[in-house]
Image (cartoon, rainbow, N blue to C red; front, side):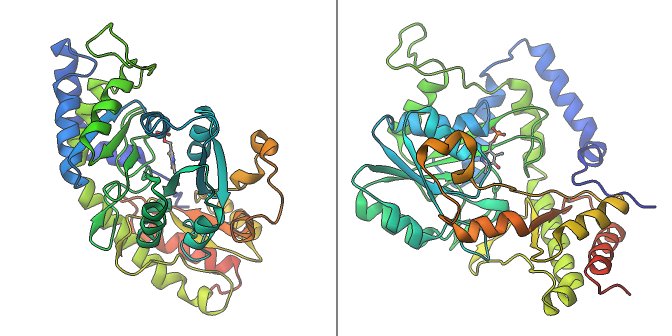
Length: 375
Ligand SMILES: *Cc1c(COP(=O)(O)O)cnc(C)c1O
């Protein structure tokens, strides 16, 4: 039996391990371990890649979001509008600075935040919108940027899953006020541990983010604001510098894998047994996840995949407005019906770059069999 994991980081490492190891050994021998030349080089390379003037390497995607809100001086009494369908960190950051998350529903096709919902959620207390580019695809930025400009509020792009994604000719993380990226190992550009990045076109914000990263000090031991230890290690930066060279090739492989799934699973979509992911026109989807909807038969398909030794995951099984830790905000079942329905239907399947053609066929055949379209 062919087993197919959800993600195969060992396969990636086998291909480039020699280069990674020499880069790491170089750092170890250099004696410079924190905020040294490799972090600076990575920041320059990522700024170029993301088409922004400034990039600041940080400790994680979660800390990138927290720092973005801190840099914008968002706190108690402020509201931040965001999607209810994302990884927890998006909302956790808002609560952690003392502001109030205001959750909005998604578009059924792309799983990204619905601009109409954002427009309806704005109040005089709204200071920012955190837009998530979910699963590798940019949200509908045109109307979102218009809404923000009309109200004089900031746009934070949570591009943790979408480095390299584009929309209408612009790169993820270059469109809003601040872009936040994650180098968690499962992201398209993953470190060997935790890491993240913040991007901006505003020199003042870039400077504030650099200061916040190191306890708000400038120069060292003179503190303007209370920041944190949000620093990126030299070892992670060295690894990421090597891996950045391969990112576009990996994205191309993810796109080819996604295209193949689209073909193979089309009969199930045509029969109404499954809905394929929807690509927005005018974008570059980088396929961090390939997520289908299974309205009637997700549990059955999951069991069939388990039996076949094929990895799968539900991103995400519960909306943010329904999380216990946000019960105090008064979120109710039915507040965000499109996202609530998605939590019951979505299933993500392996789409990582090293996936073989045979593995893709095995995954597709297993799904087709489970929904009653087996050959
Ligand atoms: C992974 C992720 C984060 C958090 O990144 P970490 O580096 O794991 O802290 C934030 N938002 C989204 C949408 C993510 O997928």
